[in-house]
Length: 287
Image 1 (cartoon, rainbow, N blue to C red):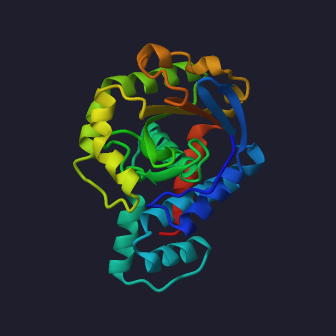
Image 2 (tube, one colour):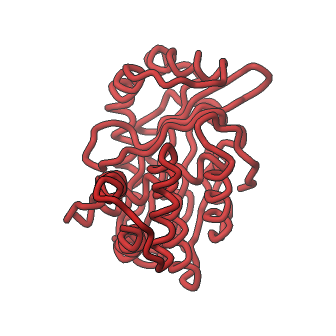
Image 3 (spheres, one colour):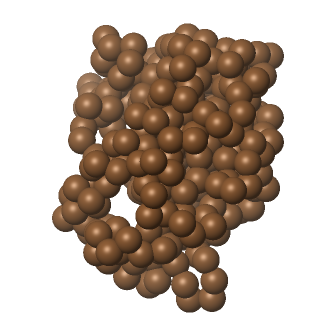
C-alpha cells in the first residue's frame, strides 16, 4: 500500500500533513491485489499517539474555516488556558462536540472510523491520485455514504469511489464487510442522488464534472463508478485475517468487474471501542 501525496482540492497542505502523520503510525500490507485489499494495523504501543493525532486531525478539519479557534482548541488541549469569550467557547464546542456527544458506543466507533477513512483517502493510501474527497459527516446518524472520493485514472480521466465503513469489536469481520457491501449495493444510487444536491465548489474541473455525473455513472454500471468497504476491527483478528473476509463483495456488487472498481481496507486496532473513547477524550481536552 504505497502512499503518495494527495492532490485533494478540499484538503489543505496542513491537513494533509496531519493525515500523513496518522498514516505513518499504521503498519500496512496488502491482503489481495484482485480485488485490491489493504490492511492497516495500529500497534498497541502507538495507540495513545494515534488517538491524539486522529483527534487533532478531526479538530483541524472541523475548525479549518476558523483557524483562530482551532489554535485555541490546540492550546487548551496542550494544557494552556487561552482567552475565550463565551461566543468563542460556544463556537468551538458546537464544532467539536457535534456527533461526539453520543452515548452510543456503536455510533462513536462509526464516527471515528469514518474520519480515519477520510485521512487514509486524502493522502492517497487507497487511490493514489485523489483530486476530491468529501468531508466526513459531523453526526454519525446522518444518512448517506461514509466516504466519496474522486481520483485520477489517467490523463484527463477520473473515476469515483463510494465508501461504506463498519467498526466492530467482534471477530466477525466478514459479517461487517458483507453488511458494508450490501448497503452500498442497496443504497449507493440514493446516496449519490443525495450527494449531488449540495454541489461543492470543486476547483478541479475533471473532478467537478465527474461529481455531478456520479449518479448516472452508477445507474449505468460504468467502469468509472467504484465502491469501497472498510472494516475497523480488533487487532487480534485483523492481523490473522485473509482476503476471504471480503469475499461477499462479488455477490453484492457483481457488476464491478474493472480491476480497481472495488477496493477494501481492513484496519486493526486493539479494542475499537476504547480507541474511539480515547479519541473523544482527546477532543474534550481542547474544550
